[in-house]
Image (cartoon, rainbow, N blue to C red; front, side):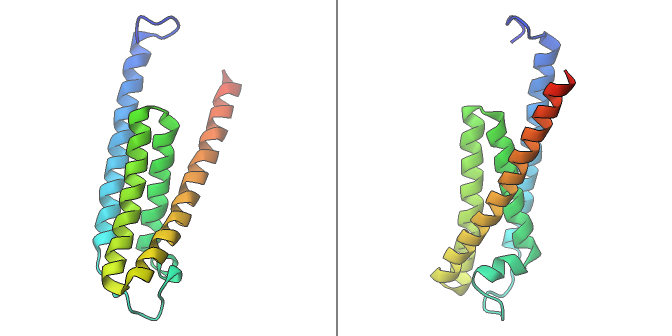
Length: 142
């Protein structure tokens, strides 16, 4: 990277370090999300179906954070990050659906996956909009 015109070697080194920090943060979010998904709660309570996801803060936080992590990985625009983003999002949605399908039946698992996807898309959309805003402001400042 240092041999390319217009790219300073120290800037290239800082970029790699920044990406490593972002990937570590996303890894931490993924582990925290899985830990909250593993937290047991009764599936056959008064609130079930899609409302079940929106009624439990651990579900809302898990799926929104998965969407944010997906958005950050997609913004990096490197094939390995895009693949990692898709894998992370699929894993979080699948694990949530599988856990609830075991506890409350297949229909609950499908509803959790659909509701989780809606929340993840919300997190991804917010990340995408904020990223576009920050990029346009950065171009204006230069």
